[in-house]
Length: 91
Image (tube, rainbow, N blue to C red; front, side, top):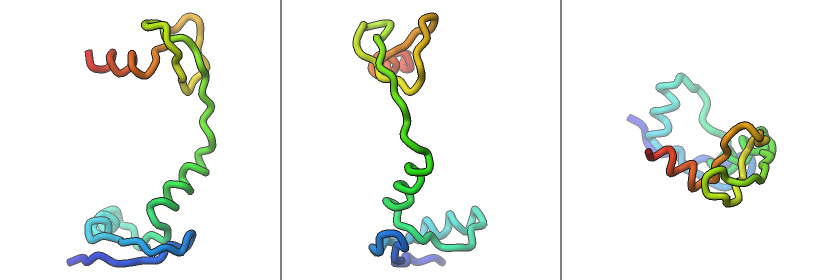
């Protein structure tokens, strides 16, 4: 029913493929318009709208290593580095 279409990004001017699967997804969601931007430009636009995320450096409560976290650490709460956090999620 659907066939891949080649579209031109209105942001960067590059061609991109609007796949049959994507077209089917758009139809299921009730979207009437085709995408106007390629995936890279859509992602860049979303990232710009979100703004830059602020990170804080602290000491991991378990291993004592450096932990970069997207929230302001508090003294009364445990803070884990990425590795220790991943290990705790597996348990």
